[in-house]
Length: 542
Ligand code: N01
Image (cartoon, rainbow, N blue to C red; front, side, top):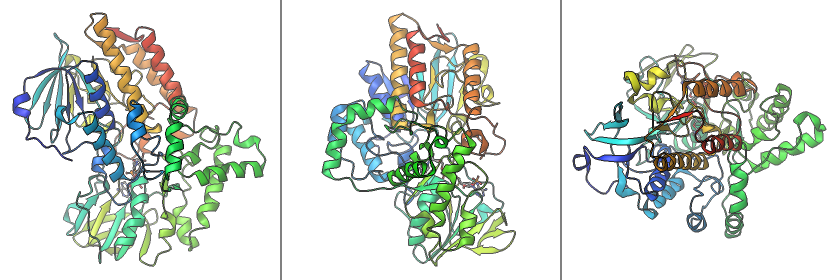
C-alpha cells in the first residue's frame, strides 16, 4: 500500500497543528493513533512512499526480525493482538510490513500521513514556543509539539571506499533494497559487511548468485535464529498468555518476557552451565547473550558463553582456516549486537562462496570491474553494501533542528547526544526524540519501547494542558546528571569494550559515547514513570 492520494502539501501548508510526528514507522504510527485519540491535531511526515519505517526500506533477501513476532507487535489494543496471526516465530520483513499496513488501515491512519515528504528543517519560534517544520516538498507546518519518530537505524552508512562510484555493475545497499527484488542468477556478487544485515542476506545471496565473495573486516558472533512456523495451537496459547507476557516484558531487561538464569554463570558446575547455554541455544536468537545475569558484566562469565559459542560454530564449518577467520577475537560476545542467522556459517561450506579476510588484506579501491584488496582483484557484477547505519543520532542529524538562541541540535550534540531520559533536550522545548540516545533504544524490543515513549509523551501533553502550561523543557542539570548516569551504567558493563555502532565507532569522527541507556527496559520504564509522577521533575514546566 502506498499513498493513494496525490500530495496534499500545498493544501496543508501553513496549517497550525498540535503535533507533527516525523516518521511513519512503528513509533510514528502509534504516536498518530495515540495523540489523535487524545483529541490532538496531528500530521505525520514520512520520507518513504508507505508506512513501516525500517521495515519499509530494508527489503534485502533474508530480512527478518530477531525478536519473536508475538512480542514484536503492538500491545495497545487487545483486539488487534488477538486478531492478527503471525505465521512464524520470527517474522520476515514482508509479514511485518503487512502487519504495519494492516494497523495503518485498521486505525484509519493513512489520512493523516504525508508520504514522500522528507523533513529538512525544524525551527523554534521562541516568543510563541511553536515549531515550524519544513519538508523537501515545500510543505511548511506549525506545531506546538514535534515528535521525532525517525528510528535509530534509518540513516544508511555508505563507506567512503575510493572508486566506489566508478563500479560499472549495480551497487545495492541492504537498507534500500529495490522493491521489485533483484535477479542475481549467473552473477558474480560481492558483499561488504558481516553485521546483522549481511549475516541474514549472505545465505540467500549465495543461493541466488553464481559466485558470492564475502568481504569481512570484522568477524561477528551469530546464533542460529531457531525460526519455526507457528501452528494454531501455539498461536492460541500465545494469545491467551498475552496479559502475563506483556507484563513480564515491560519489567524485563530487554522488552521480551524472558528472564536470565537466577544464578551467575560462575556459580554453576560446568554441566549445569552447559545445560543453561544449550537451552538458550535451542530457544534461538539474541537471548543467548543474556543467558546469565553477569554475562555482559563479568569477563570470566562472558568467556564461558564465548567458548560455548565457538565450539558450536566450529562444528558446522568444514574448513578450519575459514572458521579461524569467522571467529571473533576482538570483543566479548554480546558487546556488539549479537546477530541471528539461518545457515550462515554453513554457507561457507558451499563451493560458490569465498570469504575474504580484510584484516589480512584490506580493500584498497574499487574500479569498474570490481574490488581490489591489497592482495588481489575480485571481478564482480553486483556489489552489495551491508555496511550498516549512522545509528542512533544519524537520522536526527540530517535535519536542521534549530532551538533556542539559534543553536542546532547537531551543535548541542557535538560531543555526543545529551538528553534527559532520552526524552528532553535543553534548548528544545516540546521536542521529543523517541527511542533514541539516552533511552534503552536498540537494547530493547522497539515496539513496546515505542509504546512506552509515546504514552509518556501523551501523558506529558495532557499534564501541560491540564495545568494551562505551554511547554516542557529539560533542565541542564537534569541532562548532565542523566548523561553521567548513562555513561556510569555503561562503564559497569563490558559493552564499551567493542567498537560497536552503540558507541558510534562505525562512523569516522563520531564521538565515542555509549548512546543507549543500558540499565534495562523495566528499570527505565520505572524511572520515567517516577519523573512524570513527580510533576516532571528535572523539566521546566513553562
Ligand atoms: O550494520 P552493522 P547492519 N569496509 O553496522 C562493515 C539491526 N538489524 O546493517 O565491524 C569493510 O552491524 C562492518 O565492519 P566493521 C541490528 O540492531 C537487525 O548489519 O566496522 N567493511 C560490519 O561488518 C544491527 O546491529 C536485524 O569492521 C565495512 C558491517 O559493515 C543493526 O541493525 C537485521 C566497511 C556493518 O554492520 C545494524 O546491522 C539487520 C568498510 N569500509 C539489522 N564499513 C534483525 O532484526 C562497514 N563495514 C535480525
